[in-house]
Image: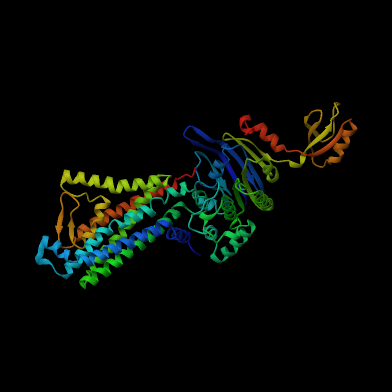
Length: 297
Length: 276
């Protein structure tokens, strides 16, 4: 079972409301991306999900178990990477991973192969014998991700997992997440729209502690067409016009409608099409749901 | 399968014994032990002078060896305090300050398990350091006087173990209040060396007695099991006999109360600690 229920979570620090009655429910494999500006409440929500902080109101249930009441049981099948990870300075990366593995109740023998597996996956094997106090930010991030993947958890919670990595590292981590989401439930936060577009199956947009939007991402349903757009009305079965001006058209199409049939219909109505591509609906969602000052950050 | 406590203990123990604090304490102990050894050989004649001020008729090798152990223990009572300041004061606050809590708190292990494992690891390294001093103390006493009051030494040793447990628990409790190591360090030092002493002076002046409920006073029993001399207060006790059973039990009871109360308070605070 892979299920996370966020039930009316609020978090207050004095007068500051970090989260205000946030609720959603996710089930099954896939990647849920929490998107929002800095300070929106994404990390706070993830910290509550992983028992690092307690909610002021509401509760989080993982596979039906209340995290607040029974964190040991609720987090058994959960791997997480919250903020930039830090480990105890005088232990090696290998020891940190062995500890993470064995604390999950896995035998020492199995942990040896498990550490080997996750360190190969996250490309951190070369420096695991060094003490963590010698690590750069990127090295810590990779070992932190390896720790999140250890024991093959069915739910993985990742707070800005590509933070601090070089471009190659970012691509590697995104590839790992793309593979993992076929079998696991991943909750990931980012403030990078292109990262969200690449990874998200469902998206939650958080702003000032409010969940502004939550729902599936219909990546393949939106097209942006550029060229000279005819002024005459456009009616194509199964296609809605989302945005329109002289040189640009954004449309949403129903399942089963081929792109070429839309282009053909547009040209038949007098338009001259130069380019077309899938359209980033996430950026639209973000602009519509995040207050303007934040969106421009 | 290894228990979560054992896994966490081994992890924390490694982190403690490889730390700079451990090697610094080790260096200090070696230095203090060397100084004490030197002065024990160099000024052994002074023991007779010291004892003859109280009862020159009672002086024999056994009393002299106990007097030397008393002097060594005079230094010993502070060793666990400094070790506890090194190892215990940052124990919980560092989880927040150094951001290690983000990893540790999100693991499927109870916080009480983490706390007790860390406490046990800090206890182990503090005992390790104190034992070095105690062993040298016994060897030097035996070498100089050809005898060692084994019973008194073992009682002193056992009480030292209990004292380490209680003073360390106290530092864990203080550490769990704060999110910054420096506040924990300063608070422990102020409470132990200023507040406790101030309370002791006040009660001594007002009631002409020591305050048995203070941890630093209870710790004096580590010396007093050799010869029952307490010159720290305005109402000194002077006896060349070892401290009595009731005195020992009272001191141990005080230590155990500090231990239990501090650990319970630390567990409650740690359980509700948030890494914001």
